Image (cartoon, rainbow, N blue to C red; front, top):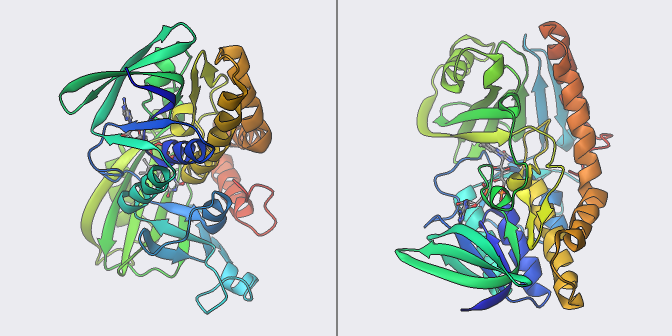
Length: 388
Ligand SMILES: Cc1cc2nc3c(=O)[nH]c(=O)nc-3n(C[C@H](O)[C@H](O)[C@H](O)COP(=O)(O)OP(=O)(O)OC[C@H]3O[C@@H](n4cnc5c(N)ncnc54)[C@H](O)[C@@H]3O)c2cc1C
């Protein structure tokens, strides 16, 4: 049986970044993903900040960038807006001219996830696609991971498993962790890629219970002159599904004239956890990262930056941990969660508390205004949260 220091399950942003940092810290790493093509089908709008890529040493590459972003335009339910365009706020820094940078990007997840996997592979990670983890069991101080690669059942031994297997993570469940996600904290998201809707380098966020109960609607630039129009709703706050709400938003909102000539080219959807991070993200021989650990910003629903950063923290931690020769007990691996809490977890818990306060009231007008104000503050230049 082959032996590894670390087996990473899932090659999304969290898994690929964990694997890259673990391998570049000298570990023998295997990464599995059940997909045959990473990032496909696309279940993400792909908005990510420039500093998320820089902080996690991901080269900015045309290979995965679809559009550059320079700011935000936040709308309330009636269509009044708060425009935060960094091209006018900090014209020396942000813009298209030489020497200036965008604030962020819309990335194409198929190419982005492949690019991240390539970085992990070049760092020394052994990568297997079409390889679905089926479970693991303890053997002395290590664990045996069982997976199916094409039609072959394979088992390997490892010191630590990293569960980077996304929203519907099984790895945490296999380890006996409480991974249950409340129905009222799961956003159902749907988006169309459309032609015929003008955009101007801004992420447009439309709040208001009328358009997206429990979440918000969005219009993002997609490159090639296309736009993404989408929304996320909390199912327990509406009797309709996301498709009904997207249709209602496009036909009846203050943007209905703007959307009149929209030609729908692609349909993408998926779930986003808007909960707090898992209280326990480790067990014997196992840690969780990314969506699997609910490392998602509960206000914006953004999970790429938090997955990348969590992957970096995990990969660096494992590099030191495995070399120290410590037993991979839950008690020893709890140090990983402590490190994650210090770097980003505390901020995520604060965001969760802010989100919970917004949705605590049954008064929809109060909720609408609190969400609009929070979003506007969140993306402002003085936001204390802009780093996650
Ligand atoms: C509609 C929509 C729009 C979104 N838009 C944005 C956005 O604009 N910006 C943003 O920051 N975030 C956005 N998100 C959230 C973002 O997509 C996720 O938070 C992010 O992908 C999490 O990364 P991850 O690596 O944790 O998980 P994932 O990207 O979900 O990767 C998990 C990987 O694990 C693999 N896997 C699962 N089970 C197994 C198994 N048993 N064996 C092997 N492999 C397995 C999967 O195939 C997958 O490749 C959006 C989400 C949705 C649904």
